Image (cartoon, rainbow, N blue to C red; front, side, top):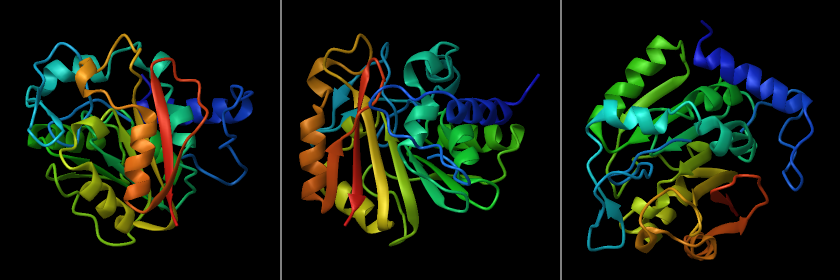
Length: 251
């Protein structure tokens, strides 16, 4: 049986050789690598079928300590079809040797794709606020031979990233969990190197899956929040059926 990292590589190469969806940036360049997941409790990825509540500061909070349960959701066999991870990672514009951050890594769904994008000389930091998820990702990285992946536990208010330490930050189905997005966004801006990219992927208001309606955030709101944090942000074209993508860069 092929490892998921091998599958990710074949998907990435196939995407580079295939026609891109209309309106999708061509992230497959000769010599370039490309550049998530589902969890939440602070940094994490949204899912249905769990109890949701607000934290009084705007973020949605719930317990993700039951990793086996959420692994069935976040790594479901049909997810690739609607999540389109190769396309999402391509929007980061990563090249080999760079450092990518998976903020709210959950069970590590996006990690094989990010690991391929930055290559053996690059680095992927998988950050999550649920210790059980961090342990799961550590085991997954070892099992799948993702030597360039490191998992770390963080808090819902601070990703613990050093200034100018990241080339790209991926935040999938996680932005709506953050309790103070303005302050968090400013910290993420500082963590990016000049010209670095931050990509937020989250559920549209019309999506049949995702968090309850009151916890969904419109894409123009995300743009405004990232702009307020000092980033240049815009909604970008993509072909995801249930989500939108906002990409921001450090000025």
